Image (cartoon, rainbow, N blue to C red):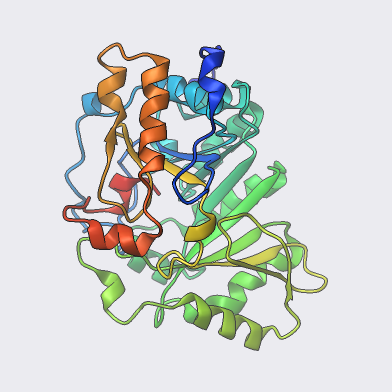
Length: 344
């Protein structure tokens, strides 16, 4: 993979006149950028086995366009970047994207979310490029269940990638687990035990309604408050500790090196403190995961738009953010079919 990084000059300093904020006093400092739509897995809660209709390459943002967006976003108070997909490690220039973002003035941390299948081949280059944090998504520690949920083999490869990330001492390593009743609720202790010897955070995430078959309606939904209750029953000595703004409840077991978090992605208890902006792989700003309204940044980029116009569209998008994800969902009409099209 290409490892050459590009130094992005700061756009006109006049753009720094305001931070990204909305009508409710929220300030946005965290930009999640989907670098592609394609994935090498077919998880049942994300897409059907045949996949979804991905857009052509020409419809997706180029590496140079993404770099430019990061540069402008940094002048608006964005200090954290996360690259997602699809599967971002499928992007041929993902190491370059990470390296350029790391070198962008104002960007304090750069993170990436992956399913881990390609991590063995890319982890060292990503570490050298300056990647601060890596989230590895897998929902089971059982080979048979892994094949059921992803429709592919590969759990040993994913676990080897996790082991390598820990060996390389990335500053922040997290495991993302979509919690589902009747599927992996019997593995809670197995995941918690990963934190005994390793300085990582295991994050149990509520199932979200972004799949064509609506798996979340089949009785597998595992509400955050029930997850917390089960966790504290299994581990009565868990102590509340600090975590990221995304992590609603964070715990640590005495003597364990890592942490456990619960993320109410569907319950939406975090909306009042939201700091996130999303950019889809085809260049649309989404001010809320559940919003159906998008803002076409690609059009500005490909019509010789100025940095000021890019900044203004970000400001408009975030000013129009609704009070919470429930209102955003109620206001919607059309929606993208899969989480891989929104950006993980």
